[in-house]
Image 1 (cartoon, rainbow, N blue to C red):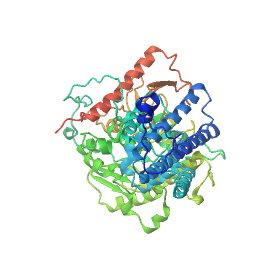
Image 2 (image 1 turned 180 degrees about the vertical axis):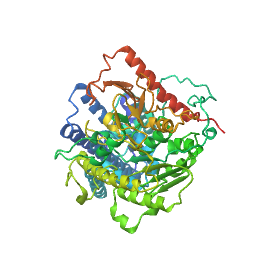
Image 3 (image 1 turned 60 degrees about the horizontal axis):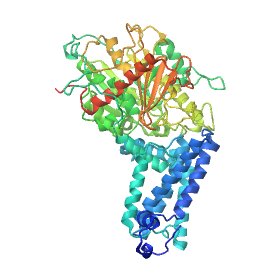
Length: 636
């Protein structure tokens, strides 16, 4: 180890003018190892033990895992040396570079410990536009964890003190000439980013996942002729051509993070988690195996309202804003409906919700913020107001509006049951006064949302919407620990996608349970059109109606986990294929025999089953291809 102590950088001269291997290495490679690297190696070992041994015990000490750990020391060395080479021109830069490395590594290890996975570049890239939101900021802090944030802050302060006294950050200076060292370090680190091997070095993993984010996502051949719109159903009439007639009001209620696992379940005390919703099942059509097509609100709303697979890269609401779509509210508006969207979360600019929905069929897009009273503020916690505030203020607002001549399509979206669920006031925690696990916090939160669902039914029954077709579902599910996963950006199993679906329309829909087939949010729009007698209306919906004659075979259900290397999934019940786009690994499960998805059947899978599921999966890539080329709906 060679260490410099001044800002003058010594020049490495080959002895006797001979060009030796050692001299060449000293000329081209930064071989100096200083305190920052040693500190990061120690940090790597400590956090590795905490995350993989003390915490989850999920990583056996096999030759492969030990090799990956040692490889992470190598990638860590390369990054440290690259930063050291770049900053060797200036002592302030060396200090800033060292502090940033320590701060980033400690907090990314904290994120890994909390979420059970490394931070993926796609999480940052897709959500950077919402970074100014207070709720997003709180989630970031909680994802990194208070211990990691505290340790990183303490280390930064300690290093500043040590730098002032002993120059522990700036004393390590790379030898001149510096440009060869910068170039060689950058080339080696680029090779690491492009290499197929993973690493337990969380900073390098983050940048490596960035390369995967932007590269082409599959080897599937896309069969699409430019200028055509293959999803458009041309067999039907346009909504404007349909004869007028009385049609029902429609109320679509999306409850935040409503996981189907809690429906009909009981807490250890014997009390039901969702007693109000459970009683409502007796009055409508309930689909027992229903899926949210992705893991975020804007993606769930997109699948529900547009009957298309959500984008697996970025968000449709923001990145594909100018793409032409034909949404359910747009179809209903042409059929004579008034269309309204009303959400509990205050910020309609979050994910560009207001502009996107107005562009795609909603005449009115409102948030609860402008309708709350001073008394309502006491019932705001976490990401927003309790559900009962939304129900009260919306129906008050509706009552003040003069009755329209058109039937109403209304989409209500709650927010109270939002991750991380721990903000429920102590006085309203029905099951766990002092929750210690995410599942306990979730139980308190979803029970409170369910209790306030009674107010929704009560106010609905006293409003002009009392005879409406009511559809209750969720924007997305939320894993709460079944597979050791508690964050929706890491979930890939059914508990990350399964949500409820209940349809109530007295006198028109006989109560029953749909148990023989699986459905998803993409099937809601076709179902609404079928119930209204509008199935022949021209649209691009790719779902299947839940009501009416059913084909013999189960139709495919498409699931998108855009993060953690991108998991793309297809369900043809009882089979489910999971494809990891980054590693090209596959998992196959029989959900009827193995509902918890413990036994991967990919090795012994029947060729015809696997071939069919892979063919279904190619549809996800076609969907993305058409989105990127604005080929869902023709102009005009």
